[in-house]
Length: 337
Ligand code: NAD
Ligand code: UDP
Ligand code: UDP
Image (cartoon, rainbow, N blue to C red; front, side, top):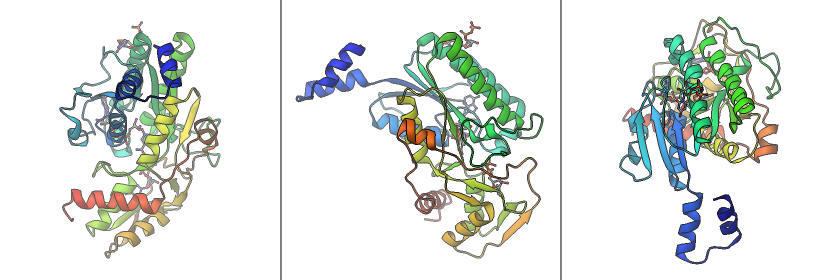
């Protein structure tokens, strides 16, 4: 197949049949775990539009059928209701492994389940990748750096994580997922990719997922006030979801096997962020402060040199542009427009 593909790539397709044949050879069967969630559903859209066969596996813990319902019935699309903590036997060429709760209130709701999903669930997906000889991309996180003592965070930093704190189920869950991934790469020659994803926002974020972007937008739109946890001097760097999807695909298609940060380095304090959202939405929401979250990372900003050098990737969407699209989505969901 590889030989045929090379031969066809060398020829410039002229006829309809040649173009169809080229597309047929390039078409892949791609599994997206957590594909009914926020990030996963945008990845589904992009891969479906590129003509691939896409299989979504999701247990609908935080994802919604609605996020992918526009593809249901399409010949290239399949939706499987399945919990990845249990083994899964299917045939695929590539695996984007995104299944895991992602927002602090969700992953803290059932810490044992969060650990099982990231450890047993990842083990199962690695076992699947090994059996069918698929390339697997793991959605890791900036949380592997914990409350970092190095700023900005590059991939060579080992992190500063409290192993028994309230965030540990997620942070350590993702760290064991990375460890398992490199153990399978070493022992079983599984082709692996690891994306360390930084804070991402955009349409289809869960309305009540408790993350700062959705909370601040909802608070401002409903005039319920914007609540900052702690002093608000802690920082985050927000990336728009289309940039993340482009980065994940670029990483999967590269031959780079070490972890890569995928995030937008534009950094803001949470106080600044509250002011930006209030300014954009208007209204008379008051910005209030309540107690800080335990173990809340104080500074976070990705060093993206690696992604630039090895993937030729960098974010394109500005905070202003991305937030406008996100606010419009929330207005539609709230039937305000
Ligand atoms: P999300 O909650 O919207 O999506 C996660 C999806 O996984 C949901 O559809 C959920 O139902 C599914 N899922 C959870 N446990 C499962 C299980 N045991 N079996 C099958 N499906 C399961 O979150 P998201 O923001 O789209 O995050 C996607 C991935 O990216 C996650 O792995 C997350 O850790 C990672 N990530 C996201 C961000 C971000 O800012 N959004 C940042 C860093 C890392
Ligand atoms: N696994 C799976 N789908 C597959 C192959 C394996 O879910 O197609 C699971 C399997 O149940 C096992 C895990 O992946 O628990 C690890 O698989 P591996 O083959 O590495 O381990 P073994 O089965 O030898 O313990
Ligand atoms: N945060 C806040 N108000 C909220 C939700 C979050 O001040 O309503 C703060 C939170 O304490 C953290 C930052 O915003 O410092 C980002 O929180 P989020 O839960 O979005 O993501 P994470 O902490 O995982 O980066």
